[in-house]
Image (cartoon, rainbow, N blue to C red; front, top):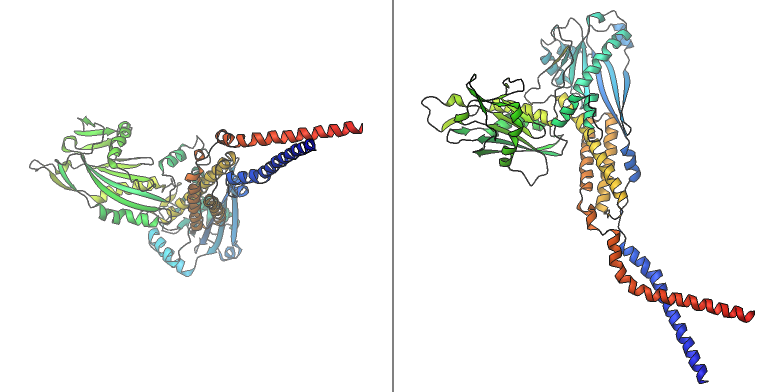
Length: 568
């Protein structure tokens, strides 16, 4: 009986050990492994991947609306009854395999009202443009073309199209299209000219293709578009404008400039009109003993010092080190420098590549700013007492800076076709149609940049599975996708102002998501480091459990063999 008790105890002990091992293994497999997996998994919020993939294949449609108004003497009463209300023309361009453009021109025809006829009877085209503007203001992104008879005196003889300061153009009918021609012939004659007006006052394929530079490589043959896109600052929600007065020798002259009044008079009207495009902040400073960093050469034939165009590239870096930077803002900075040479290097003139004097005595650097040299040698008389008090002519200076600012912001007055008379932009520094032209380009540029950013982010997150996607990032991505879809839809319907607003929201949301600090891959351990951490923790626990399970399986097989042997 004692032997039986000992054997029974051993069997019971083995059975308890087996049950304990099975229990521990079950707890580890059923509870431990899922709990460890759940607590250590990388959280990745849901992203609209399918919608992002749709945006990667960008199909943009730009719709422009133009109203053609026939003045008295251009069509007969019978032709007026047959004039079509609306004509729609589509023009498609394939930029690359992932980008296609479609331009839709919606032309509406009507005859001029009595009040419009009175406005067209003004002595000059500028006065007629102003009178027509007071009658009705065209919405943003649309144009009105008034077809006037050949006998009209509003335009010079060698001009047949007048582009005003607003969204209005005057088109004189050709001599070959006098009253008597059929309506189809008249419309066929006007169609190419109206299309030219649209390309000047709204958008052209060249401008839109240049706006896609973040997404599509520009054709090497189009050197003008490449130069313009490289000169212009990239689209941004805001810009910092800094005006700096450089006085290299305070002992020679004491400079006085009314920069605050000049900004309010010449610059602020332009920035107010550009408020829908971006936010602007302006500051100014005076730097003493600031040199250009390039020694000008004395030209005995001119009795003056000169700076050749080849040396202008070396001027900016030494000066830029003195300008300082606004670390509190991430917006691009436009620098405008007024340099007054000292008495020993005055007068100083800038020469172009043909060794001709630059009329403005200024130059600009792409995506940086502009520098103007302001000579004051006329103040150095024989009885001058140093330092000489100099009051700077701010009208002359701001005229140069305003032209440079327009170029750097992308307000480019395109070369008008022959026969076009373009009115000056006026006191605001920007015509209404120039603003529309800039808004078309910036809307397309924002859409292209945002789609590239959001597509790159989706590809990055798909390739690297260890990156955590927080709810905040998912929200920004969803917001960017929604804004992009709305911007594309508004461009299709021709609502330019809303398209620009949605495109700005899209680019802001996409950049916030892309540059979120939590997306840094180095914040998370790669797989080899995970194994190095987990093996010392789990191996000591798993080895006894695995050995016990193997022992249980071995005993079970042994018992099965013994039973089989007894049966045999």
